[in-house]
Image (cartoon, rainbow, N blue to C red; front, side):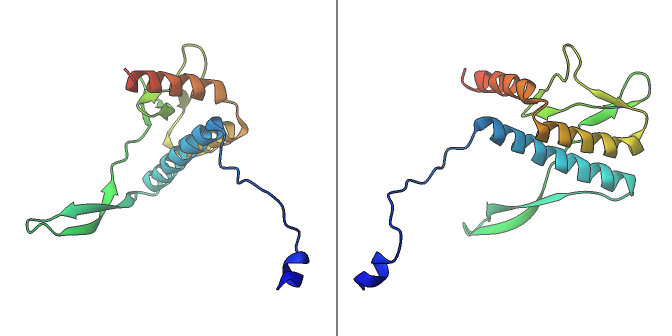
Length: 146
């Protein structure tokens, strides 16, 4: 038995679990943008998009059952004042400012929306919005900690 262990390289190692909070925030926003992308694609094809999740529900007799329910999703895009479609990025309940004083991307129609959401996903993944995400997350955290 000692011959097997002596043939292995035994070291003192410690697992590394700490993840960069900025990377976690990026991933959170990318997941939400992917939901918006799927919702926009479903809207373009005339279908409905619903995310299913499991929820534990207690019935009248006190028995807890797991039920599949639809998650409530709201689109981040809307009709702007000039009749075009605008999309805003959200982190939690807050809208992210993309540039100073500007919080939405304007597109000509809903068909162009799918491409813009793809570009926004790429921008978040590349780290172009890290400063805006951090400041918005800090504002959300400050409001929660009050």
